[in-house]
Image (tube, rainbow, N blue to C red):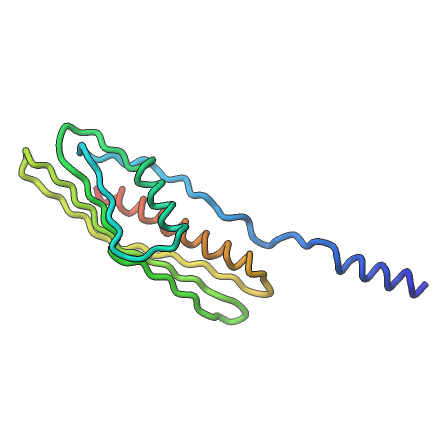
Length: 155
């Protein structure tokens, strides 16, 4: 009887545990249109691979230009990511600063939009490194989504 009980306990402890976290979420960016002919993207800071690839996707697929003249220059000036300890867990804070310059030569008009966005994620209890990586990537994805919404609200 004790052997069966021991076997049952070992079997239960070896069974896979469902992850507490969903996989990395991919945000649904809204399309932003600018009255310009060309667009340029400048990064003046070091970015994690995930952030850089999402920014490039956002710029190429969701930032649209539809005009006869002018240019749009979007610059990322600062990116910061801080991982800190909280009670029984970790917290990830991410932020970035941006500038968008819309130049329309025929109207002798230049519009400058500046802003800063931030996001955070937390994880408490017992967690794996994979779950922690997921929190970081979800925080980064949310940051790009906030950038998109903030820029759209200012044009």
